Length: 401
Ligand SMILES: [Zn+2]
Image 1 (spheres, rainbow, N blue to C red):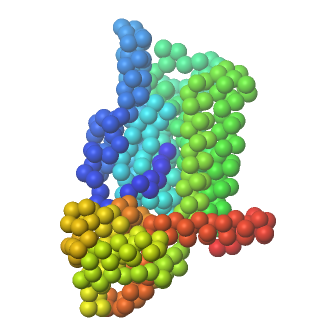
Image 2: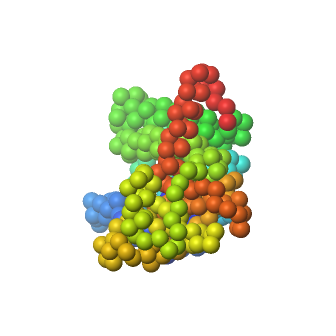
């Protein structure tokens, strides 16, 4: 599996690895700059198997599990190394009892996503082929004979089954299972990527997520023993993972889609008050009370020299009284944008996180055209979403972008 994560704003410095959401996992290795972590539930699973079969089969089972999960790590590295080749940042690989997840920052472009998704299962195909070659030349039974013997036993894997047979079966299962077209699993990502090349990512995601959730329901029914014979709690967990994963990715894609291509210029407010460098806080307070504006560009000699926010104004009033000057309390760290820059850049920046507005001007020496605050950017996106929904209901499901 591989999941894109969009939690890291573009302008934000990457926190030192080891700092982010790893309180529930332990780092065991680092390959190509990618930390590989064990989730605590996985450690519990190892401990449980080891203790419950201590002295007899427990240790052998832990050995097998480590073998299988080595193949899972290699699978995730397959995704990760191809992603790195395309220039994406891979944050980490975490091993859960149901499998591994490689977290890739940003959603890859469709053609890239296709190859990133295929690379994982391809690694298991190679491992399975190597095991089969080994069996062919160094053991009496070929891979084919062993698989036939296993199916004749009614798929019952006994304690006498050799570890190479189990690893062969594991790798074949990893390929078949991951290539199910159940988005967000690998097969579903391949499906989404292929569809996205033809019909755009937003629509492709909706279709792939729908198919993914349908397959998840089937897997859930099989896992609960309602379809087929024999229940499997593991399958139920995977079904839930797929079901909610698909829903989450669809929601994320929808918000990305609303933001897509929106330039700063469309969202900015043009009608706003400014303060002069030499204004007093009393004057600033009067302007604040007169309207609904919360942040005021401060101008000196025709140039913007800072921004005074409501918070800074109140702090200034409390500290120095209303005869103090605006210049003393304003924020001098200003971000400028041009009208054609993507709004998405602002919304993902650290400025938006601390609710600081961005000022818009035509070029570095141009006059101030407008200002975008988090509030009016959100309002703009809400209106855009409503317009899209109306468009959708007017023209069936045929969205034009
Ligand atoms: Zn995968």
